[in-house]
Length: 108
Image 1 (tube, helix red, strand yellow):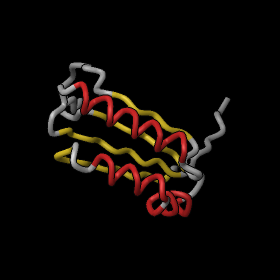
Image 2: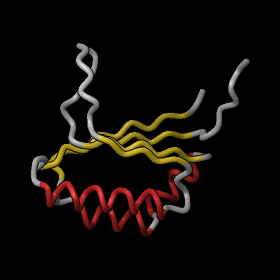
Image 3: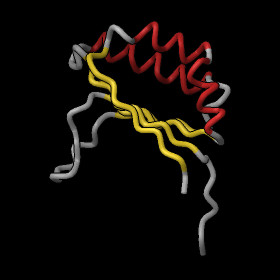
């Protein structure tokens, strides 16, 4: 039985925080990223987490946080990029990170 696939577009973001072990920095980042996902009109699914610590040569555990958000279309993703809640998240948290890496993927 084949599963029906939804969520046409996936947006994966890896964050490397400047001060990753600071509890105040962690609390602010986690609060703001959860608010972003919960408040977005375009995000269909959201997942935020830290590296699982799986120990395999192909696994990158160097980042501090990962966020995965899915959308029904690339147009929804594009609207999310300029959405007020996304812009607020960037303004509130951009000073917390030293690096951000993004992987955007269309469903096949």
